[in-house]
Image (cartoon, rainbow over all chains, first blue to last red; front, side):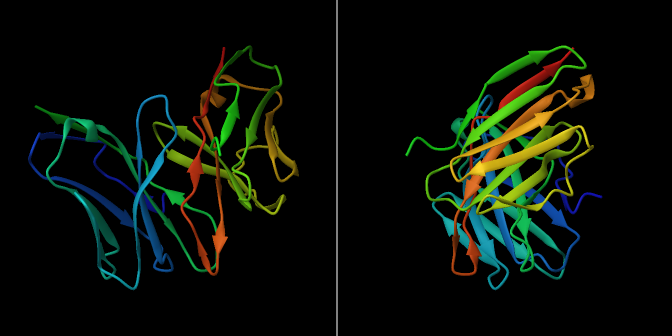
Length: 112
Length: 116
């Protein structure tokens, strides 16, 4: 049972445009959400997070939006750059657990 | 700090053999996680430790899998006997609890396991 879902396995975006990566979750107890970025042959690295008390968090070109009623979050990258090409994982955790539950990942390709 | 260190980076073994994956977490971190990455399930949590104590091993797929953390600076994930379907990339990660918030986990580079 996949509690965190990334339904788009891949996304292709032109350089300079906006990339929007989506993530859905099923557990309403989740209260902390993170996005990780993974390059080939490397471990995932933390990108940005959001607490459930907020609906938006911004860090430079990266913005995460949280819609608790829809149990949906998204990562916006604008403008997209070729160096953003990677696999992006969303993850969630809840108040009664210390573990991070990850989605299946979305492979983003930014082309010139 | 050098980050989370995993060894080996690559492991190829024959079905039925024992495989041991190793992890050195970031010094001072009190949580250690073992994940497995597959195409179908993404990053799947296998087990995690807090202060060297296993807290949740519900993700361990079978009794063939076991994990230990004998001290704060070392953990192992063992598969015995290994099977071809265990082939995946295994990641170790560590994090630090500050107040009531678990900070983001830092991942090692992973061990790519191939069982033939």
